Image 1 (tube, helix red, strand yellow):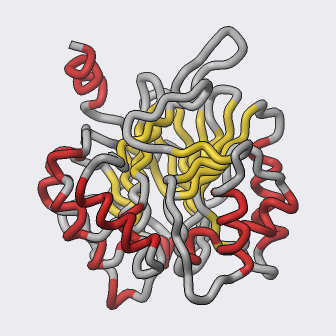
Image 2 (cartoon, helix red, strand yellow):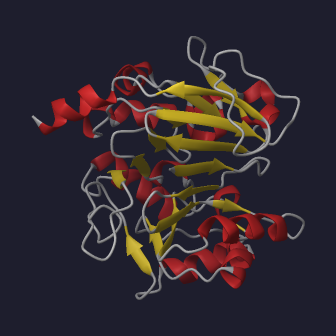
Length: 305
């Protein structure tokens, strides 16, 4: 069994993966003094007994690194996965300063890019199995990425240096994170990203219209469910024609992956979903339904061939 959790952290992102191996992964954070104790308690409980814990930073926007200094104080970050950059900001928050400290730490930082391989991220051994994580982007040689990196290093914009992260369970579900990539940028790099069918996709830029996933991407991803993050409703794209969970309404979303099933639970007790199948699960509170993973076995066989 594996657990993927998307925290409700206002206009920001924070996730964890409790792998079905000796791995635990945190992706981004947006903490403050009011929420840090509850979130850290949850993270400590979920990561208990795991031998490897890693933090993956998609990009250095404040709503993706907020409170990282608080997290590091409570759960010391020794494996900091980050796109190599020299981002600067005209006004530096404590969180950005701490991000830069981790980013530039030769012992803690591991610079991710398309095709990165690392022991226990996607290489297992006799000690522990791999985490099932792969990095699909950035291609550091790509001209569009290099242009986005220059803008970030000049303190202008940070969205389009976001990494693309995929988590795949053996014979089970898959999940995709896209940071805050913007629609026009995704369209530019369509032919340079290896996109395959994915069970659950977390909409980039918190589900905003400015980060709407292009149709060319959706056709390849063929997601069974899209999680639309937290942003003012007038700025959201609701992905008509696809199953969605909107975090504005659902709160925290916990996804329990067992075999070829994903069981969904939310923190808002009044939230319901008529597009999921009721399998009467009760591992956590506020179960809203399940889906059966489709098509990925065939896709995996095609990739192997």
